Image (cartoon, rainbow, N blue to C red; front, side):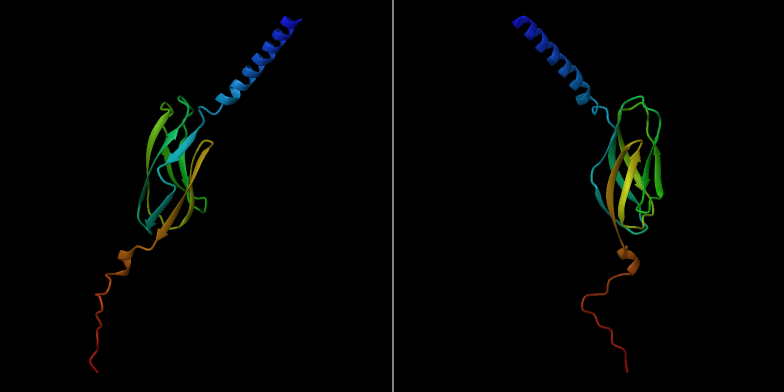
Length: 138
């Protein structure tokens, strides 16, 4: 009787292990986009370079990495090598003019990042000399 109980118990434990093992392994090869930072500051009309990486299963169907601005307009597209599992990325975004939440997408992976666009100080002209006052003759 005790041997039958142990056999039944070991069978139940074996099924628990077999059913829980795939659940723990499903996320191992998930798509993931990583950026070195998620907050950026840029001057209006100038370019921005963003470093990051993408981790994906090898030999995946070819797809493009896309970038969308706050108005959901595509502003950047680059091909990702389907053979490599881990790939370093350097994205060069040109002529940025609006602040807000941007996003990169690749298949089902997505990463959001914030950009603050400021007015270029060079477009205002040189700053006035300290304490200088110009007077006009009467």
